[in-house]
Image 1: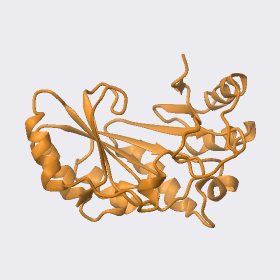
Image 2: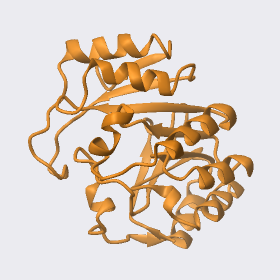
Image 3: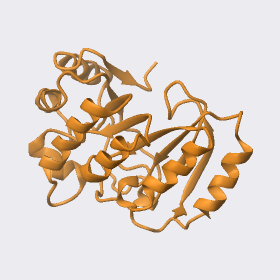
Length: 230
């Protein structure tokens, strides 16, 4: 398997762990606010293969205790279960970032106990999901099934939404709250513009709007937090 990026140490990407973050290429979505679009559209070259990654991890045993797998969308890759199994054999906890499009792969990973933590992006209300994901159609049944699988079977998990002023409004958080009602944790993170973001004209919500959206979400998920804001 090709590895398209590696952050050698992070205290942020895997809650409670000193981890590295592994980036896989390819994604079902074309989110206009994506920070990793070079992974999505295939322009980012691979930096190593899975064998080289495992060699790196062997040298970090005792220094790191977790590996976060992100993308792109990791669940696109048939080799993901084998990669996670080999990482766990080295003694590392594993975290998966996913968009929820692939419930069958997610079900396999959970049933085979290959992930310790799952973070799933919830893009928007059902009516605005495809637009926010930058595609013509999203299988909302697959999204709903992934949410159920995570809430019923993940050892630990969170849901999260990147909030964009031009894409989100208050009613959307009622709708998303209903989608994940009763979840363990929900994080709102404000959009931040960068050179790698594919589309111009997007902006962060105001602090007041973000706080109001979090208040709405807490009606459905009491443990709703705003991430990345002091």
